[in-house]
Length: 274
Image (tube, rainbow, N blue to C red):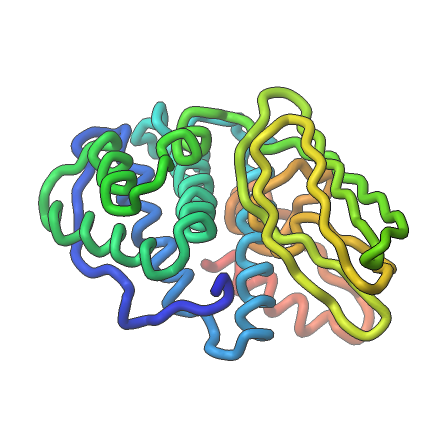
């Protein structure tokens, strides 16, 4: 279900922010709408698309923070000389909606988003209205899950170590998940590689130090945490092509002196012109 979505169930209409504190929602309804609308129908392609898009967002979030500092989405301002007050709320809120979809499932998530856009079509909306509507229609406690992405300036700092032991039913895999600092609550995917197949499971993390156990008939040869990049995490290398435009004023294009000189010189000149 993570890697599929009925395009006919996408929400329609425009809502307006009651204040700067709601800019995150107006921005993300467009961002996540576009994310789901472009989701490929083929499951394998949809997985690669989802993983790549979320990884790109993680990189851009860390790049923006490294260049301009961080900001809590609810405290972001409308400014024109920096990107962080725009990028950080938009990116973190995208993860927020993705986490809500993992928790609620496609059908309930779609009902919630459509209702918000119907009820507040061309009207001002407050953050508390958004969060209250989600809880009311879903019947789930989602406010705490949502607010952490809106009120915090950091990103999850997660350490993961798997342990495998033989059991009567096969092999027991313990997922030891530890978070530095204040813990986030989140859902993520974990991949288990076996000799001839890969099995992907969704895991819910609710504590700073948590151990989750799963049992398989065969011993996994590899375990990959946050396989689909369902949450942004700290990374040492977070550079991507889009950074070229995030910080274009400081770009230095160096082209070679061998056979590619003409092609590289041409594209450098085109970038300069743009």
